[in-house]
Length: 288
Image (tube, rainbow, N blue to C red; front, side, top):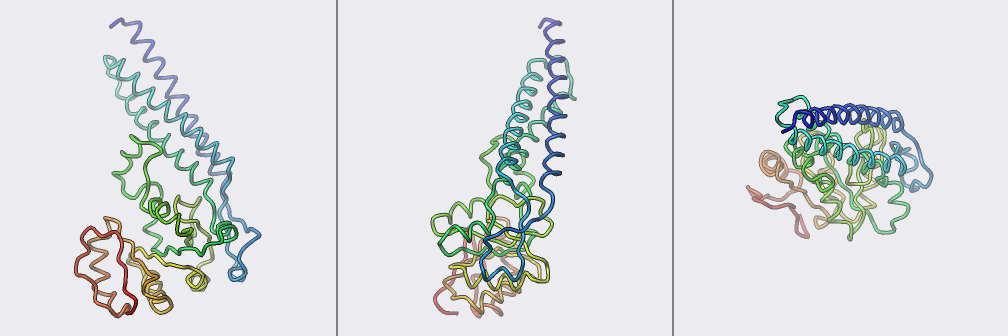
């Protein structure tokens, strides 16, 4: 291969990575600065007003900007990796690694863009006349970007197509009712999935009580925290058994489920199957 071509390709790589790296850092910093903080909105349902639920900042414009920049950075990453293949005789591992990093930054920004345009729970409760579906879980189960770190590779290869368990659950329930949840207090922006509202730590149990009473179904994801066991106890005492579903994504079907088998019967007053196999949900009959 002609040496001048290889030199030109390497020079193009350098410009691509410099431009892509500066763009990625600038956009991420700008988004963090713009979306920090909390705010309160009008239209909060009467039964929630006394608990002063707040939202984290989201914006359609910021979401579109982040999505566009994410797509551009993703294209820069792919173009750079192709140039590395063309100029493979240069043996420049640094460019290949930068290409992989830029290829990762693009999908991340695309996810940030989608998170920035998510509807919040207050808007959903105000505009959707159907009874909501309440999603209760330990905050530790919330996916910041992906459910498992191995999913990062899938996200890079199939940008825009990756879904977390919560996203899939929200889509599956869309025809039945909107999925809502209480958000993790330190969320910078709400995750994709259930529409969220936020309350101070000393009020979350009261808000769970109010939302449980207003919801047609309650879906619980297993967790090891005291908060989860309180939620399970409350739901078992106040809801009909047929209103309750336990969500069982693959990583919860072993250790977490065994924890439910050990401690759940004392709360639910029913014996649970010793194994859940590949079941995605655990439901209950009309009586405990």
